[in-house]
Length: 210
Image (cartoon, rainbow, N blue to C red; front, top):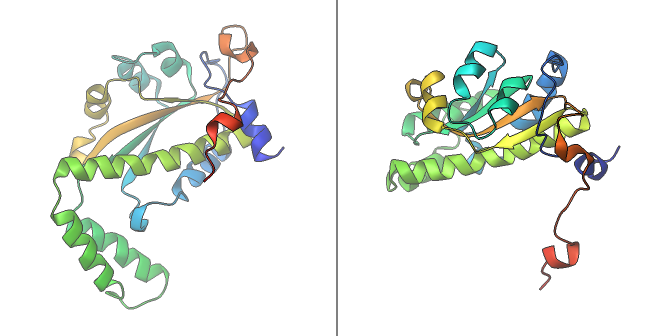
C-alpha cells in the first residue's frame, strides 16, 4: 500500500484488544522512524520512553482521559522533551556528530557557539516550548510507520503530565512528558470509530495557494 492508503486506513483507535501485542520487530521499526525524524539543528532534544509493563500502565491511567485505551494498549510511547537546553547538551550532541562523521572535534564550534548564545538568552520555559514542538515531528512519523505495519495507534495529550513524569522519574532525567502514543490492535466490537468514514477538511478548503 502507498503512504496515502496507509494514512486513510489509520484512525485514532478508541478500544484495544489487550490480548494482542505488537512484536519487538514492528516496535523497533516504529521507534526507528521516530529516531530518524528531523529536528531543529539536529539536536534531537527528546527521548521516547517505551512502557509495556502493565503495572506501570495501571499507575499512569490516573488523570488519563481514555484510561481503558491506555490500559489495554500493547505499548505506550511517551514522548518526553528536554526541560531546557545547556552548553553541555549541545556539545554532547555535536561531539557525537563529529565522531560519526570522522571529523575533528570542534568542527562545528562556530555554529554551536551561535546556538549557545541563542538559547542562553532564553528562559527554561522558552526552551521547553521549543523542544516539545520537536517531538511532534517524530510522533507523526511513528504513526505513519505504525500504519504501514498495520498496527493501530492513538496519539494523546489527554493525560496527567505530572502523574506520568513522577511515575517515570522524568524530572531526574531532565525531561518532561509532551504526548503519548498508544500502540496495539483494535477491538473491532468496542472501537466505535472503526466503522465510521474518515473525515477531513476538503482539499479545496485545506490548501491556500498564493
